[in-house]
Length: 407
Image 1 (cartoon, rainbow, N blue to C red):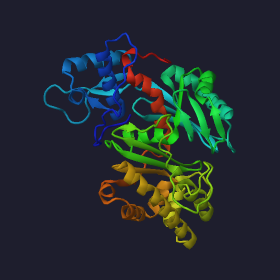
Image 2: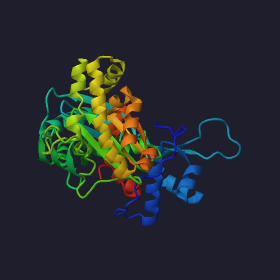
Image 3: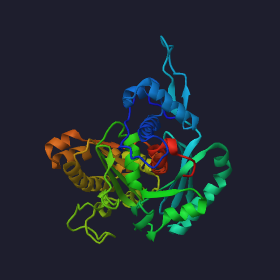
Image 4: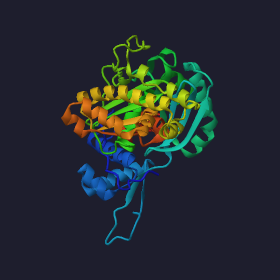
């Protein structure tokens, strides 16, 4: 179970949107805030919840009792040294509430089981050997979930399935409009997977989901303004969080930092433009120079850091130079407190940790450059699972007193 050891307590990133419920709206909203705090922090005492919500102790007691009666939270005696007086019980997410997560890639489909509180209980990566079609990805995910069904039915209440896709997605209708690296266009992936499994499903852009996950559970803990960039075989995706809210744009397409313009005479990108970040900063040349099998950012980071080959060193500097141009724009436009790099971008940064910071600072406006911190992502290979699961937890967290399994 995720603990809150020393990390800043995370407030809910979004204002709660009430939904139709037979429960008193004010109480429903208070329960939503309380459960969201427990979900995001793992363990909080009654005293901490009273302070964070501004509710009185008796109201907190009633709400916790209602959430516990629905098996959404559990109360335990406080851990640590003996306390003087009557100790405040700890409140934790119930271990039997979970979401399923799916992340299709160009060479695999990953399926995860994530508990309330952001704990990944299981993660299965199913290699495909080639780029899967939308139907193939859905069939693979449905087959893996069917294999888990006995365990799920016996031990968990599943809130639904969150799907993280590297492409343009409209979350309102569950449609993947365009995922160029997967070759998908206008695929109703959410409906397809829901029909195949019987669970409600939601889909969103993978990098946007990862940005929210890092803000809540990872390197962005306690930070309300951050930019996340992920680099992988499917290019470079991004997510922008401003004042605790993910910037989505009109249809959810915001954050495509991989298509930031970085080179006037650059190569033609699949988007139709030339000189995009993801045409100049790519993982394939790095793996080829190092003679490594593609797909392992951890191995790439180690090899990049150890290599003295002039060709490798030159490619590191070349790619970091173009990445710095994109991040200069990010710093000047969004004024983030943190920039979180993931995938091969984190490996590039780790290979020359001060070079990127110096280049970004030299090219950016002085004031916002002085406020930003660049770091690698903290959640590692579990990041997409945690991010996708947040989609499936959204309905529960918005109105927990009215929630029922599969709603």
